[in-house]
Length: 262
Length: 262
DNA sequence: AATGATTCTTTATGCCGTAAAGTATCGACT
DNA sequence: AGTCGATACTTTACGGCATAAAGAATCATT
Image (cartoon, rainbow over all chains, first blue to last red; front, side):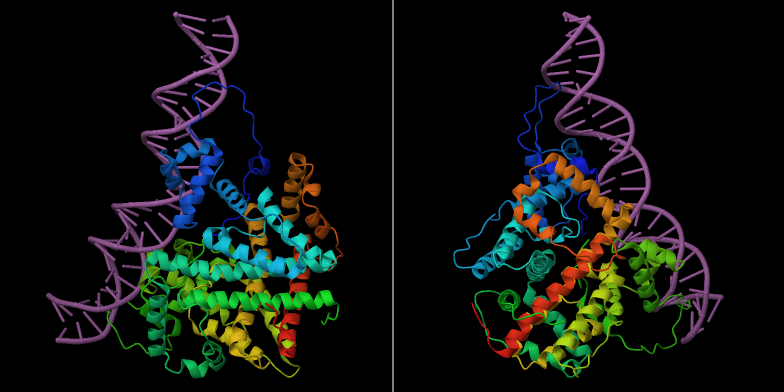
């Protein structure tokens, strides 16, 4: 399920996202046993464990309540996901040192994001199209923007670059994250999954390598990165570093000013 | 819903994906009123209209059958999605001219993918981590790989580049696709959605632009691309072109050989 | 005419988000 | 002290989903 953020009442959503310490007056009725924060935390915990396909019932259960109890604090599942999304983003730094120039800073930003997505893979399933518009999401992009503004490039050009870096990191992270998730769900390790599939594939289509010679060529030029990590993880890390390097080379070219081909 | 490809019996899945013209002998029982192809077509049609959240009931209904009738031909919804995924990919060219060098070819590939994702946004929700392993998906990546191999770069380096280009195009396409989908579902146009949200946001957090000055800076350096297109579409196209240019500049640097910073 | 394979429908199970209604607990006011 | 209304939470119920299980109908074969 890909979740489109902010389907509900916009005011209610944004108020929840930006709510400060709401000094509540004394009110009638039973004391609240829960809080928005507690629910968001529980939601994150459940999502970290079981992926985005968590249920309101599961979140409630973790708090010793029914699913419906959550609706006292949160308008619905979509809004809860928005809150979870923005809350996790608070884990990320909101600023990076520019002492050694923009490139190490961007690299650090990218690696932080990479690890963040590894910790909370379900975040990758929240739609990027309509930003959740929470304070921490803003802070994360602001951090990247601040680094890139220091290159001196104009905003118009930087928007494309911010997008490219963001898409790249997300995409690369998604590849490992979903692989882990799929393996986790079925209990299959990546290796086994690949082994079973490629065996059947070669059996059914023995000409495979002749039909797709370039893929075969790409796949076979390898050297181990970290033999401790499983095969797929290795691959992903290597591709992440290599891709990021090329991407930043492109940015460097733009900064140098010796670029602009159609 | 993000769909993890190939959950079922691997052999069954791959046989369906690669099945040739299966010359069926004469068999007892009623003549099949449907076919895998017909079901896949119907599935694609429904998904194009209503997004990935289509139901087996809807696909069956379009064919004048119940949902359960589909299970005679296809093991389950996941496998159907795999088949739909690979089938749509057949729309894409399997080869690009290298007459003018690799760069125009890659650019063309990227634009074809961009438009393809625009036609079938639900494809963006099929997980990339575990490739579906169908013939047409292979062909699409093979086409990109063939172009990039012509740069003379080693396979090890090319894997990262293939990934980067793929992630970038997917990410950029996803941004518009999901925006369109979200707008379509709620009936809200993008403009209205933004207008409502940013008004509330500024009301609740009047200091917004001071808190995130770099974002404000990036957002305000604009010039119109195509006044016919809606705001968000404009933005997306501009960012796509700009980002792709920077990315390919990076590749060009690597090809020139004057690169390799850590 | 009987058998068994095949297509398709019906019915049922167990999930899901959440609407509606009911119960219990409290502060504030008469 | 007694009542009222707001609040927290549960129970029940609804309509959706994928799909398992069982049954009905149709055909080639024996």
